Length: 93
Image 1 (cartoon, rainbow, N blue to C red):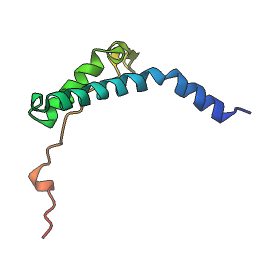
Image 2: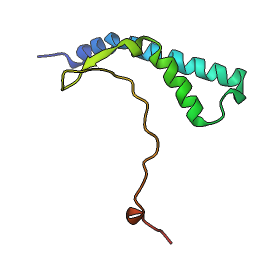
Image 3: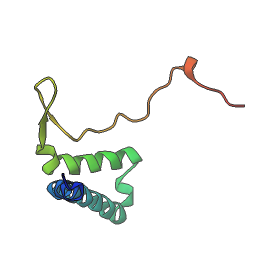
Image 4: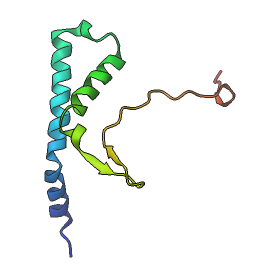
């Protein structure tokens, strides 16, 4: 029988570097904002800054093989809010 607690614990410790990378990048973003709040004009600027910090670290060099045999980085910027077709909008009165 497999001890699930040890398996999960081992799996988490294997990926601790990811938590370190993300927390470090967030820390740098917060420090930059506190130091120079007008450095960022919008929330999207903060997203781009955080993404640049993450992609320039270890996460940017961590590639996986896709289903099609290509290599891809695990970190992707979201595409933002989805556009909704006007015929699909719901009006609440």
